[in-house]
Length: 262
Image (tube, rainbow, N blue to C red; front, side, top):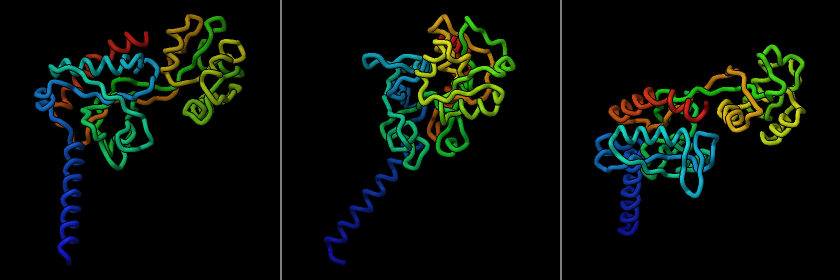
């Protein structure tokens, strides 16, 4: 083999080794001791609004997820740094890329808080904290035409968004209702407010947000499906960091629910 080819091959091996080391270090994430020494907790947060979980205004974020991250940072004795992430489609450096081939986002975030549902498929690539929020499908209705319970929806007009868990749950749990399928949530809510629908079925964070923001609306205090949100951590997370996150989640989740959804 010529010397030039040998050099190129050696360089390629070196670069490949460095890339592997980078992936391994990122997959393991920072230890709690390293976070304390750095002085900041780096939060990966979706760069788009998602109900009361995270909202962006003039480059600043607020919401349930941000408050919980602030509490975790305070427990670690450090400040919080927010790194905006696109949700993505499994691509590297995105929220969804954290549990896809390519692994943990490659810009030094210590955790992700973005209303992420805990699933076995995702847990193969990341570690989840204890659940901090239980979500599901909720019935939202007008106070002027109250809905007493699920049985009262028999024969009533129920709006759902197409190709979502709302639609599948409605067909399973509200088969005696007359279903109206909408392409988007805003037009469905407009139909509800106009009285064209008796109720709508949608994700509980959004149903609770609508009921809190609009005094003419209310929800049935029942979930017709169930999913849990967790803090997303690197797969090989430092046990001390995981323990701290879980402890803060247990201490703060109820109070934050009261603050943002009651």
